[in-house]
Image (tube, rainbow, N blue to C red; front, side):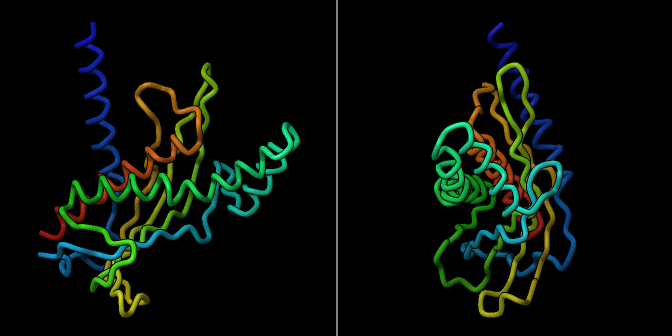
Length: 200
């Protein structure tokens, strides 16, 4: 029984990875410039991001959630809003970077001075939910830009990534940050594979 569960989990992982790979598209330029490149700068961009299935602006989403949680418990909304931002540096970026580097053999430098910079721009976030008896996976949409560090307005490649899911096999992702961490981990893994293949 245990081996069957492991087999099912592995099959689900392979199907998920295959599905994600199909959601990555080169929209502009190419990655020829990255042949032989071992290091890149990395920047994360959350500007003009929309949230939830209603596609509302992030500022409105945060305001609504703060008010909702503070009504339930004083200070809970403020604590949530702080975590919404700090999770980016503390949880999402490390997950993305770790998996990207494993798949691409390119080291990402947050404060580097490399010739090229990878900008990972999250354009939409669905937080999902997990209340035990019911759940909906989180996911993100994003675009990855490769630019010249000295001239960041010059986009050398623009890659879109849609519906990158976030969930855990154990089903214990009751925390929003935990679910979204999985999205960024999968995004890093898929983008790293894609860039490694395209830049050969």
